[in-house]
Amino acid sequence: MIPATLAQMKEVTRLLKGARGPHRDRLAEVASEFVQFGGWLLAQARQDSKAVQLLNSAVELADEAGNGTLAAQALNFKGYLARQQGRPRGMARWFSAAAYTPGAHPAQRLGDMLQAAAGLAELGERDDALRMVEAAEGLVDTAAALPPPETAYWLTPEFNRLNMGLANLGLARYSDAVDHITAGLAGLPAELREAPWTWEHRDALKRATAAR
Image (cartoon, rainbow, N blue to C red; front, side):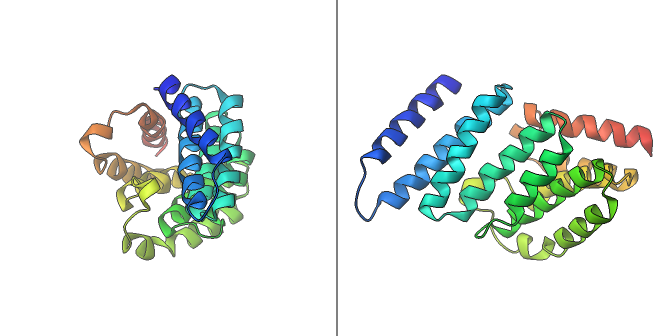
């Protein structure tokens, strides 16, 4: 998928450079989504430096279009990449930035706060992590009452149980981590339950189960 996605991304960004008029911002949003999807795919393939370059560009395009949802999602992907690299400070930084991006959807803020809390917990900043989890818990009802953003359609209440599980694992609340991750995996659509990105959650579940 990477070659085809990057080819389309380049064509859309080329069109944007020459675009003028009242619909340019909408095209910038499309370009931002293409660029961040390219970054996500490269992150999955562990082409980390190229992924970061695209995600930085995606944030700039989202800001240019005034779309906080897209900006927050690109920052979220940077946090995800930091987690794959084993950099909790980067996790705390980028997930926090995503959570507090103006215009972010409540479901995004909820998930990002929980993932930032996991990074803070790994750094030994337990009090800050607990405060972040508390702030996230205050968004649960608001996020559940709204449909997920169209550009982050996967952010259902069930999906955010996975993020709650990661936060609890970082805080050594192992039984809670098992409960949340188990429920989160069970709540995924059937076609996503074995997706490669779920492997880290399955690994987290094994660690939480062994530790409780």
